[in-house]
Image 1: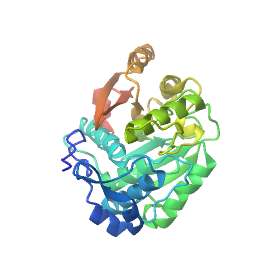
Image 2: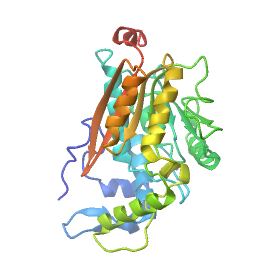
Image 3: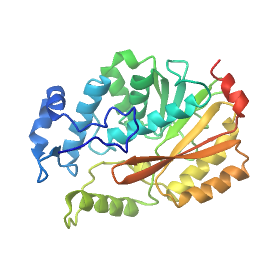
Image 4: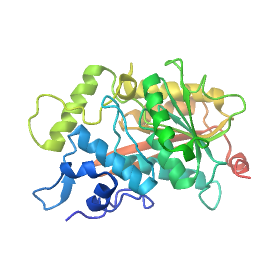
Length: 309
């Protein structure tokens, strides 16, 4: 029998085993992918792209009241519980400046690389009422994200989208002079090449199926901008850190996921070099997978409190 997922954040709505009856009532099509495994647990085959996408659709509808969520087969299909964890840990980070988690539209967040799925802005707003700006270099991804907003018109005033016209920049062209964001967040491209991405996906698929599959199933999809960039994760986050200096007074906390623990040392050296006032690493766990949020700020502790007045 499945037990509570204690590794997830205490406010994460997905700590309990999936109630597939409820989820199927939201998305009937999911039923054909649900089965009882050898451990007598009701589950789906997570290596099947269609099954994962329908599960996500049901989770977003049931827990966050997002209607008609969908993404093209070629795009990244993210695990919802892990994405929710990132949002809740950002809420804890913001709560450090005051006695409680700030809620409502006065908290504005920036999602770098929001993708076709728009998951971070959806969960952030539905969980805490925050206003979100999602950005991406991929026109088709933004069109799909806009389609999700079209099906959920109540979100059009609190979730906005903006195209990054230059893939060499992260905050430039996005953050205007008048903008003030409480936080930025990002799930960066992990791999340094298409070949590396395919090998990584093959390993993931083998682990899920516990079998010797030779052809990788891209079960979480992924466009080039979602999965790889020159220099991989370290190069991307280093660029983000260096560019963040130019927007040091407009973003309270810059944050980014770091998959590879070995990269933290180099990133910490860079943050010291650019004289970040404060930075920290927040560990997250989803099952066996450990990930980390790197957070940094150029604003003193005293001045941080003024952002909430």
